[in-house]
Image (tube, rainbow, N blue to C red; front, side, top):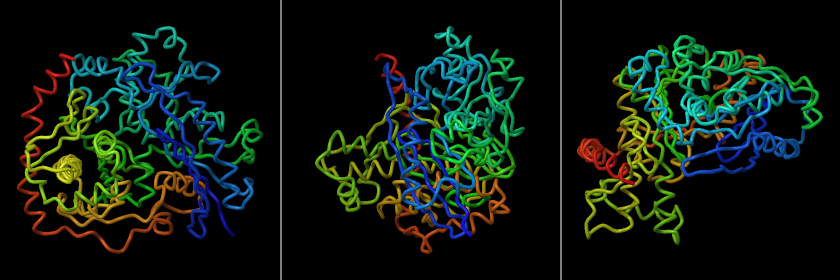
Length: 501
């Protein structure tokens, strides 16, 4: 008999809902609802939490229609969500203001204050993570300084997906994978860091109780059942951050398997069994969706976004496919042209919000194909910096699984193989984050005895790996040190330019 589970991925620009038939391993339906980011001031990024609820509600009847089942047959629901964001609620659970999401840059000064006043050693010992604007901690500090009338009325602060689950169930809560991205959480203890909160004068009462990602998180309430058509009492499970859920949906659940995602941004994610963080805070240490598993993570902010920027502003008459096809005809190294993908500042490993993108080595012999290839190479070089750091911290790297837009063209995949000097595998999983959410529900409900069993049944990788080309590997090994030298060389010009503007 079939068993059906809903997976909901609350992203930055859309919400996706899938329906998994756990018995057959098939996805019976996939539906997306788009929404926008509001920017009331330059550098701000906000969303009305109601748009997430409305998006979820709009996908449900389409999912049921596609799958040809009744909502009463759904045995569990869980979530994946955009990380870091801050939803401030009053005592009735209503948002006090629009959510301030991860892309928001207004709290840059508060980040600097934490580093200056607390110090990198204390920050690392407390949270295991670097801090950036858009994380919950600096956002709360900004609200305290700039919107006291909101801050003093806060009853609870929630991450985006946790707010959606609250609306569905009426129960407050969070889980380790998302909570560890806030700057308020100790990933080793897998709980809020009370001493750290006390030192920052942030009340512990602001933060919801934490349960494992696959733990029960309530059930569909009667009011939401009437609103949505779901069956009241349908079990709901806690969920996970988008990166952890995507890793789960791609079968990246044990050390040795590494995820490389190239979408708007780019991420390398490596599971580890000990919560060891980088003392220089050049990498993130987050909890995985699996109990007692963590992952090191590097983040390149402008990965696919760099290619989009180049196309939209300079080559809008060309499709992405045409541009990457042309880049395949440029030689390895783009004849000396290098690109730093810092269009929106950069996270790991440099953690510099003032860094700016740049081409270096530009000459008269360079054409469009060189510019595109340099952008693609620069993105993968940036991701390799994170991969190299993970290895220095002891993370085993045995298989790299590629996902996201970086898998859509053979050149993207070949560049990863050549620059990483490793075979690249591909998951055949569509909508991996939403699938990871559905797997959390399936494991949490007891349908699968373990995450390993769930992944063996559901997740599949394409059988043939993309192998590195030996000569290309040799050439990129010569180029890579030069790429790594560019940021230290140009850093003063980035900061000086930003300061003058």
